[in-house]
Length: 149
Image (cartoon, rainbow, N blue to C red; front, side, top):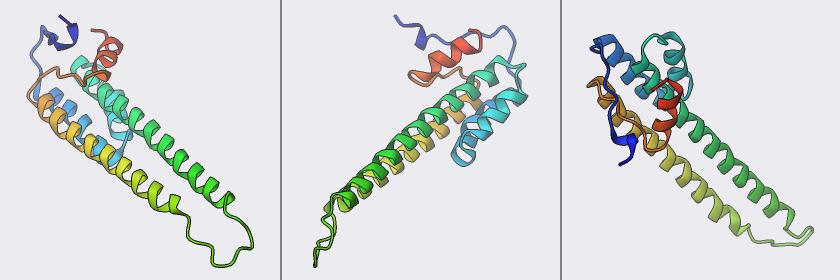
């Protein structure tokens, strides 16, 4: 049985502030990107519970940002390649079809990533506010190791 599904038992009862800040770390990632979880992580270091949840939100934002820039780089590369491959000085040149293919794919990628971020933020903010040590599927194990569990 994997240890990712075993909740960590805390010897002290969580305070309402700890639960609120942990939930806020998840909720803030929808509107402040990585800045909100980082500020909460840096200001509430005395609570393992808050650090754990803020670190997960921060890790997700790192993954999201990396994916965003990879997608953006691919989009720009396709657009540059499309323009470079167009024959010069040809009258009545048709509009490049790659623009119609790549732009919607890039837009769908960004919207799907934002929707996943919104869903994660709501789900894990609610779990954190209930006092659960809920972990993101892969990122939660990394966060748990970093906060000393």
